[in-house]
Length: 617
Image 1 (tube, helix red, strand yellow):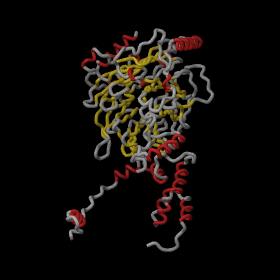
Image 2 (spheres, one colour):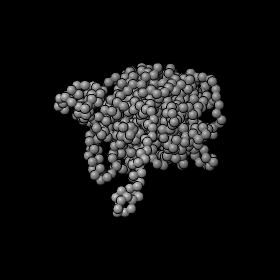
Image 3 (tube, helix red, strand yellow):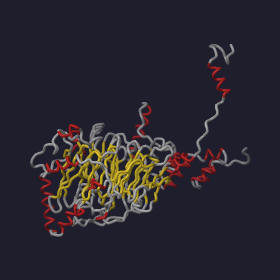
Image 4 (tube, helix red, strand yellow):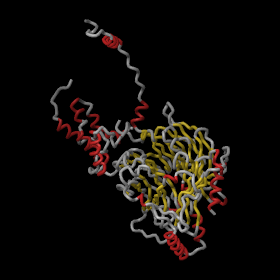
């Protein structure tokens, strides 16, 4: 029973505005009046901006229902609670990848195994399903993996160690039905990594040096496995042949599909968000689906004929699996061995002349770019466009640019000429359709789930720096910048995200894999932590501790409140949100007892004859 004088709501609100959020919640349990004031929207807007330190010019998430629930989403739905540590790897864990369904994930490691894990056990724990060693194929280690679109095949990329410890890469395709090896494909340099184009075809790379600092990157389309008719059908086809200058090479290929560019999960442009909100109001009136969806976790959810023969031979080399314990030293930064050897015998003047000649040759013998990539398209026209994204460069060997090539529909199968589309005798090389300069050493890339935005980890060069020697790139910052690029407008969106750090110099830089979910982006770092940011508000929400460098992170595509992190400490850590941890720990509710009397009365009422009340005429 409530008694005594009652403070005015306005005074209670003024007091609550000076309290931290947890004190406000506790005070709200005191009485009905305080409970009502503790849910005030003005109060929670003020608490939201002050607690998360967000500029007030940043609007609320377009799908948020209230300030209170938005505060709760950022506080309670971030996967920042460590619930399990997986220790089955015996060396550094380099990469993690989820299946599209989220029911499994794969891990790659310096112990030269690829492991598969199950995420759907009834007890909520993650368990090892399968492990395969690649040492019998003379691999040094596995470095990257990716599930195909229907989760039936796994692409595994690794470093293949040849004679004298010279390194190139290799890609293996594993069937997830019976864990058999279906094919192996050359991949050079190894940090092209490789990727799926569609369910049955993958992209790999090859590199040919045509000078001391000039090379040619060839990107190949490969069939993932051989059918019975494969003797009469190509299993490889050349996609693109691109000239590299100043010791640069193409690395880190990935494919972006533009099916949802006009209907993304989240628009990062605040002005576009405002326009979308107005459209959403009209759509609601016309009973059309909403543009934004937070889901349940939001508030309460890859001579020429010899190369082709080698590529086909790799496909026929699928043999039984075996194990070896031989270990090999880690190679130097891929592609540099040739350049470093040349620098010992060639002077700087000769190298400058080579670059000038290469640029003249490039201008004279390169096909024109595809203008359809940068020209504005009509609404709905670009729905089925497919882009190949990769890191490259023009000034130095360190990757500092993102190259974009459109893949046309007739290029998405290995049928047709093995060396690709016909070209004139003067057109040796393919041009890049678009180039985005990051002005720093790129060390990671990841696509948003809708493929609208590309997130790029880079370590910046000093402002105004001039590169006079391609083999002496500028010093790089310890802070990692996380750039956000809109693949529809092909421009950088907003300011870079910061918090994570790296310490290795240019020639020792390694890839730090990041991942993007519907609402969050996460990345590893060399400072022994993983990091999570909110995509809309551009704020860092959590740091995930390890005992060594964090190389990779991965959100479950089925539940962004589940995150994995992989580290040089040889572990994989499993992180869940505080909300999910509470739900898992809560005791199961007993079934509610059935009330027999009301049930009987209800049945009796429903069975009463027409024109009667409670069975009475």
